[in-house]
Length: 295
Ligand code: 13P
Image 1: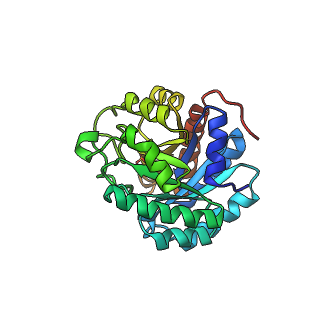
Image 2: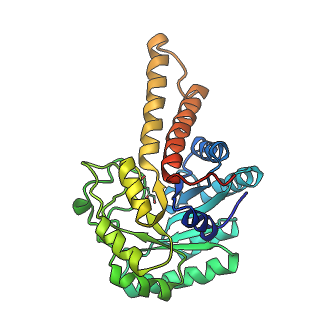
Image 3: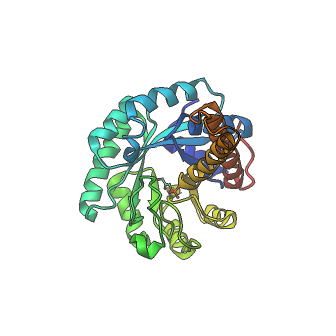
């Protein structure tokens, strides 16, 4: 069952939990996300990032995810991740996306508000939810392994708690992506999350909050962040890393027994799928934060 971004985050709000938002850069990841949601009974968000257009074109991924999700008993939302172009948002909405994350974080504040507002109007025409970012994650979402670093190196600008409620009313957003110390990509050291910033934002606003750069964070920090108001955790890089390691081990094993082995083979697909299932099942259960499954 497909639902929109606003409604899936409302479920998380009610359960004091977070929904995992995983990226759809491969069929293995999409299938694993849906299977884990069905098996655990917890909702899941499947995201396509505009930066992944060259890997998986929007027009190819949308009908696939919409078809799988509509036939599933699980509660699923298809969300556009880090969209920077209004025309791209419109294409996604026309293809059945239930949410858009408009990323105006590189723009001056007024422009961020102006464009976010226009995407809000577009989303409301399609019954979809809108996520916007205030502050900046620094490095952009693209999934390249050279992204990520410390928050300082990435150029993270914390979300200003005092600006947050004005930004929410000016844009008409449904959920707010907050910058409080996480970064996209592989962490160079231990992530240092600033829970004071998050707590201050939560005190001033009443919309669900989103953690970007969510993979690579410790389980105890996830729980702390969820108890401080995080309702959606964006999780991509480390899931892809673990799946890549599983695929590499499969190739190494095949080549060790037969140097002429055909390695782009179903064993690789199965290894990646199983790795995604294990990773997603773990995070979905941690993010549930003790809430009862909904299905
Ligand atoms: P990671 O790079 O930490 O997986 O973050 C993904 C993300 O925030 C997508 O928007």
